[in-house]
Image (cartoon, rainbow, N blue to C red; front, side, top):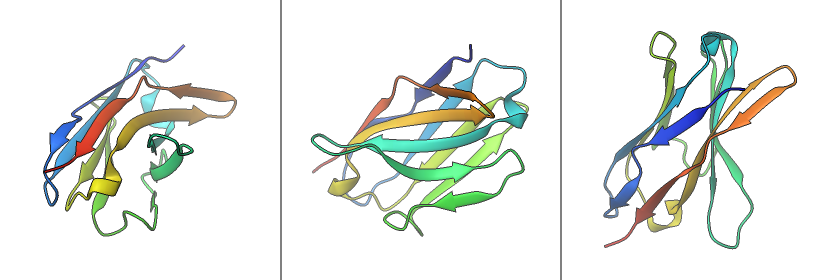
Length: 115
C-alpha cells in the first residue's frame, strides 16, 4: 500500500501562484507514473497533468502554459506548479500513483482562487 500526501493548497487571488506537493511512502517511487487530477463541485474529476516514470509530461489543454508538473525521485515527491490562477481552477486537487495494476490516490488538497 502506497500512501500519498498532498500539500500546498489554499486560498489565492486570481493571477496568483501555488505549488502543490505530493509525497509518496514507497521506496519504488521512481517506477510510478504520477498524475494530478482535480474535481470541482458538481463536476467530474479530470486529469490536469501527468508525468511518467521516465519524466515525460502531459498537460491538460485547459492549463497548458500555466501549470508545470515535475518530480524529484530522491525526495519521492511530485509537484504541480500553478501560475496565473483563475477562479475556474478552484477545485480539490488529487495526486495519483500508478504502476501496472497498482493504483493509489491521495486525500486531496483544496485550491480556491478568489478575490
